[in-house]
Image (cartoon, rainbow, N blue to C red; front, top):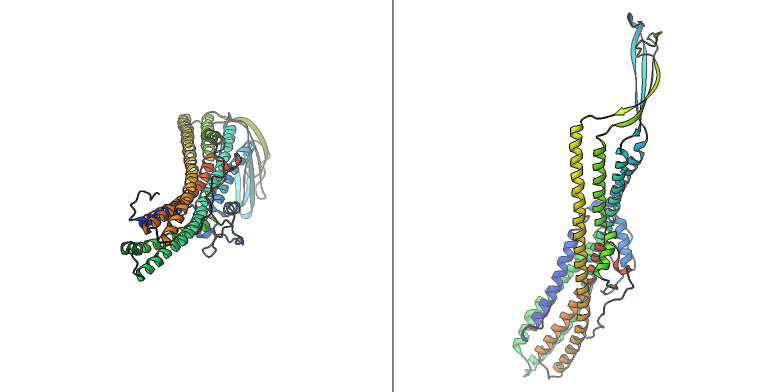
Length: 488
């Protein structure tokens, strides 16, 4: 964003190009953030919330988004799912019971195992209850490996909640600071309109007075570019709409509930930038994506151990209790007779339970082991990619902080330049081209400062997301240099 290289005959066009570039870049970024929001199209998830009378502060906005977001609710439901699996694994050591019961009518049955007689003229009932129990005594690591897999699964669920939390914060930053940028750009456009109106009035007056200072070509050029300047106002209204709607959707509010912000200006977030090595050291233990990859690899390894343990039998204690009775079947006098209509028995045995499809189980164990190896290597790749991302974001943030200070100083110099040229032009000693050149320089630097502040603030949260911790809390804060207030 620079207009200093343009010729002196095109200052108004340079102003238009400078502002338009800033607006379009920001509009595109904000629009993509809103469109990509994972819950923006789910109208059924809207939740009515009372509007903040004084407007949302950043902290209040983030808290409300996390409370109402379907993305966060989905992540927490996923954690509940993993915790349920953990509970199942914990209770797997307890015995399992099976109950079979039934009743039916039957005709009278008399006799014994050798001779019997059925009397269909007399009917009664028969009922039967059978309870079996299996208590694992030793499973060669099957249950312990399931517990380990479930423990890693819970870690994955917790990491997913943190991933959702940081994703929402970055999206909120894009919409929040986009809305503040739109407000600031609107003020710039209003102020720029004042300068153009003053120049237009002066040229009209010179033309009416038939002054020698009147330059018809500059007047026509000004009239031609005014329409495009107004186009910037419509672009900025689009930016404000997209940012406002992005905030509304993130808050899961209906379309008739706009979001008010407590902040009245766009200022750089106060943060002391630490070294990239320090951020990476924090990220290695806090970044939720790395935690999730490591936990997933651990779960895969535990499941592979479980498949390997399935090659061995289970030592179990099995028990059975059986009751049966009928009022029309003759009870047998000896226990050696098989009497299914009268039974009262309890028994138990210690034995082995073994699935003997060893070949298939060996192949499934090899498959699970290969998947565990793959997950472990993917965790290493995820670590390396995240380190690169942390260092890239750190450098980009460092660049933005430097540019904020540069443009703050340049803006103050351009303001003095503009004031001096306008005074000369207003007194009849300066040229309109010099005024417009100074005007372009001033507004280009002002817009560049705002754009860099917007990108700086979003980068703060993107780096926090990559690190897995709020970087503004890692050291005492010290804000970048801000420009002084401007005057007409």
